[in-house]
Amino acid sequence: MRTHPVFAPALPRARRVFGVGAWAALGLVAFLPAAASAADSKERGPAGKVLTDTGTLMAREQVEKPWRVLDKGQSAPASDMLLGMPGSALESKNGAVRLSFLSDLDEVSPFPVIETAAVLHPSNDFDLDFTLDRGRVDVTNQKEKGAAKVRVRFEKRYWDLTLEQPGTRVALEIYGRWSPGSRYNPDAKEERGPVINFVLLVLKGKVDRKCPTCQLALEAPPGPALFEWDSVNGQDSSARKLDKLPAWATAPDKASPRAKMKKEKLEKFRKVVVNDSLDAAIKQFLYADDPYERRLGVYAAAAFDQLSHVADLLNHSKHPDAWHNSVVALRHWLGRGPGQDAILYGRLIKLRHYSPAEAKTTLQLLHGFTELQTAQPELYEVLIDLVKHQRLAIRGLAHWHLQRLAPAVKVEFSPAGDKEEWKKAYLAWKEAIPKGKLPPTLKESDIRER
Image 1 (cartoon, rainbow, N blue to C red):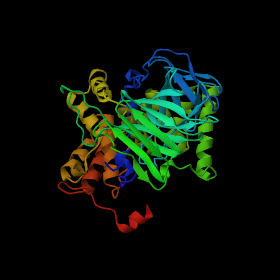
Image 2 (tube, helix red, strand yellow):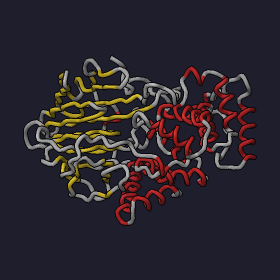
Image 3 (cartoon, helix red, strand yellow):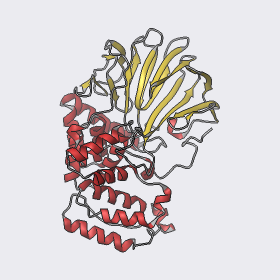
Image 4 (cartoon, one colour):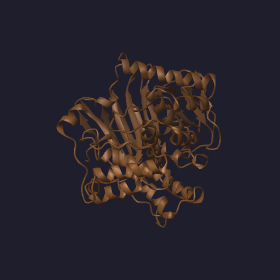
């Protein structure tokens, strides 16, 4: 059985978290579709009910249609893409199952989850039938007695889960990431895609899992609680036994100052959406003075495919965090599924007039590098040369990587600056990392300070 990342030494977050915002820097926003709807049925009758406040859940019928605010108590329609704020929830049509939408905006989990989206399906055989398009949900049996039956669909497959008793709860998570060092080949005969991971973790009680060719019993810790599938290795041969729940799966301290701050920011965003519009909320948060609000604004713009706002931000923002959050968001967008890289490559050439080499360079920078590549001086020479590239996206991404691969070096640089600023940053990086050399390492005292 492979070792799940929750039990393996975690890579530095800068190397393992990918996201959506840099799409904006490329100026392609108006032409970028959201991930295709995962719905198998076109029926749009009621399939659930919104449990949380108006504006915590939004729905979209088709990619070209606008997002709609769902009211508390409103029916959640089948076949629509539903995107929920962290902590939002709905229940199945018959009230038997609660579906909670969660995320990892603080990047504390080994699972890089920014937003959660799902599609409900009508069903006569299950209490809840849904597709998990991206992110994390908690599924809870809220019957007064008896088992709850749930079908969860993902990546053209499904698992049938029986939550044995009232209160039984399971976490489900799906996320996709391109492997570091991946290269885009426009002439490839077979379509490649990001590595997709699907995780099932029993949080409370007992769960029976079935698929067309398998059956497996799971139980919350201490017990066989964890099961995983990925698009490279397939599914685990058996569930992994845990003595206790991992830290990422335990409830946060809602009384902590940070938890209260996050709740206040999310509530502020929700109120602007309800009282004005989603567009107004994104704009307000993107240009906020508060860094956490700016992060929420970038992630929301990417999640709702309002990427023209992120483009404007990257061209005008004076805040260093704008680039980091935007790159995280764009890499997250690319990880939604196969074909996203092909869309970017084609738009860069057709709409932004990139050369094929420039388009491939952009994708390479977004995919990142292997540990072997980061141990080669040649990589740093290439990245330093790209800091003065004519394309905003390329020089910005090059500097973004250098900052994370060489944390001991401090070079101030705004990719949207003029050519003199490019040259100054280029010379500073060349002096700090001479040709044929690797970046200097942090001193032990510096590490402690961080």
